[in-house]
Image: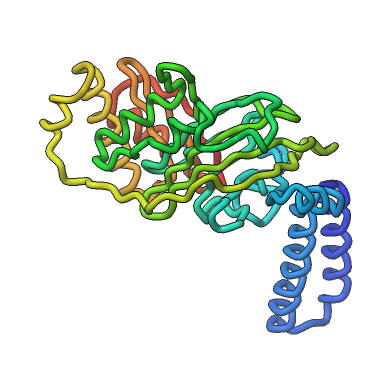
Length: 306
């Protein structure tokens, strides 16, 4: 699929060079805009599910989306994230349009930038018809109340690596298994809060996934309280280490924001800082340096340049 896109883009490039030799500067600018428009149209076709997928989803009364593997398509398409993210709310693959699910290294992911977070559970080869708010894995997510105080939110983000309840373990990243059904809660502050059930219908030859999905519930937009004193959080933290880690993470994100590096998720442990998210091209080394100088801890870099 991508090879066909590259071939088309290459042909457009060659033709444009041949035809542009005698054009004025203004005409060349117009030609670039025309070619970019053609590429974007082709990208939309690449992101669409096949006709049979659309027909099958309609028969079962579900929405359907194709998500591309980030490691294969990121920086190769003009859409930010390379089609590896999707917003159920905005029906968009653009990372900036309230990304609520992602595909990377054969894993489904939720919670990508800033204070946003989420939880996923794998229900196995369950029938969509059997899923309701009374389903065990769904019930907890349906009744879950997002935290609104930023320090508490940062601590909650850490727990989403493996979020244990009495009966279910949720995660923010799970293996994507064809035929399996998942339930997902994606909390995007000041944007959206959704509970979705989805099924991986099939995997295409390029590694992209065809996903059937539907909303279970859409909640009130969550807001963040940023001014509550840290002392209040100290009284509620499980350990003093968690408070120390929060302070370190907050300091790093403040320092990064001053350099317009706003899409970095910072996770602080006692001896290590993990950086996730994205930074502009050429800014990765600067982001790592800022984090190291601010926290004076070992840096685990999982950032990607965009």
